Amino acid sequence: MKIIVIIPARFNSKRLPGKPLKEINGVPMILKTYFQCNKVFKKEQIIIATDNLKIKRLCLKNNINVLMTSKKCLTGTDRIAEVASKIIADVYINVQGDEPFFNPIDLKKLLKNVLKDPSKIYNGYTKIEKIEMFKSSSVPKVVFDSNENLLYMSRGEIPSNKKHKFKLGWRQVCAYAFPRKDLIKFYKYKRKTPLEKVEDIEILRFLEMGKNIKMIKMSNKSMSIDTKKDLKKANSIFFKIK
View: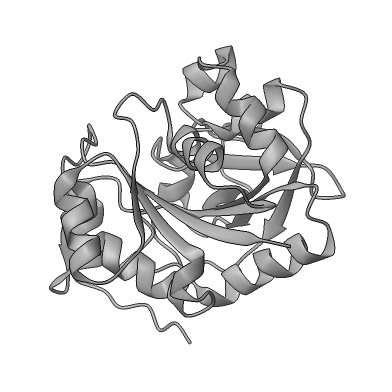
């Protein structure tokens, strides 16, 4: 079975322009994400997919596999799918380029599930501990059935109640695994599905296409960098990741 890890890195983020090259403790974010993945996978198995020459040059300087992709990709998963159309593998593992503290233990857990059943789509989740995160529109919230199959994902406060009080919740961890056939179908869709467009959550496209998504419980040792506030926080804290 051929498995490759793809790290999408789009330069023109609306909330944090130039995000992949922003430094955390003196190291560009995209490199920190790569180093976390390299703790589990060999460098030959990892590709950074970008639309920007500055990011490409940084990768080449650090002897990292890099592939230029279209600036017109609708989402990071469309970028992964574009790579899948050019490089054939059985499964493509996606770790978002803005996850510089991604826990290698979680990556091993994702890999273990892929090896057990490579035909499924996988996505990570973890428990929400703080109400601020539950209320944040930057954090996709997850609900799933008793078998951990995704029911829905939203930037809104789910699950909710009549009093709109935070009782419990889970958030998405931005690590995925996709079989090639499902990625190609996703890519051929060429537009965002209705709920995907409203929520701005690309995994919903698979759900709206009738695909089952298996959620995997992961640690809370991760932090997606989406805003200047997130970047400032990332530079002021350290996660102890083994």
